[in-house]
Image (tube, rainbow, N blue to C red; front, side, top):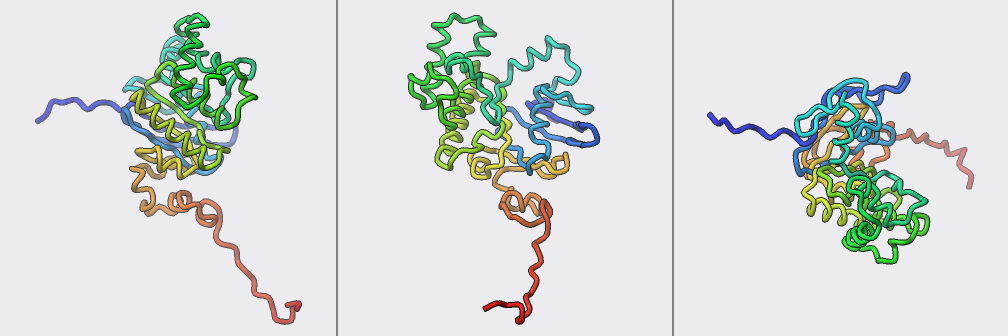
Length: 272
C-alpha cells in the first residue's frame, strides 16, 4: 500500500452559495483546479461566472461554502491573511480596469511598487521588459490607457497581472470585443505568460475559439452550478444538451427556447 500523499488541488471550491436579494446566483457551486492547470469557465451571460471569480479573490463575500487554495480555507480569513492570499493572484478584468490617470508603465508596475517599494527608474525598466515580452513598443510606456487601442489595453492589463509573477492568474473575458486576429494574439500571450510563470489559470470566456486554444479543462455553469467539467477535447461529446448548445453556438435549445413555429400562409394571403 502506497503512503504517498495526494497533492491538494491548487483551488478547491465546494458548495459555494451566493444570493443577491431574491436572486440566487451561485448554488452548490463546485470547482477544482489542479496546480499548473488552465481551466476555462463558460456559461451564458448573467449565469454567475464573474461572481464566482470575485468570490474566489474576496471582492464578493460568499454566503456559505468553502474556497481553499493549496488546501487552506480562505473564507473567514483575517484582513492580513486575505492580503497575503491576494499577493499570490494576478487578474485581468473584462474591460481592462487600467488606471486612466497613470501612464502605462505605472499601471503595469502599480502592485509591484506597493509590494517592493521600487524607485521610479527601476519600475519603469521592469515595465519596459514586460511590455516587450508582450509585443508592445517602448513608446507605449509613457502613453495613457485612453491613447491605446482595445487590443493594446488588453496587453497592458496582462502585463500588470504578470508583473509580480503570481502563482494563480485569473482572466475575465480576455478577448471580449476584439477581432479574431487580435484575439488569437492575446490567447498566445496568455499561453506564453502562463508557461513562463508555471501559473494555475482560471479564465472566463464566451469565445469558444479562445477556450479551445488556452484551456486544459472546461467547466460550464448553469443555474448557479457546474453541470459539466472535463478535458477541452471532450466538450463536444458530453451528452448534455445545455453544453452542446453553448459550445456549438446554437440559437435554439434548452438554454434559450425551442425553435419558433412557422405558420403556413394560405394561398389567398399570398400577394403576387
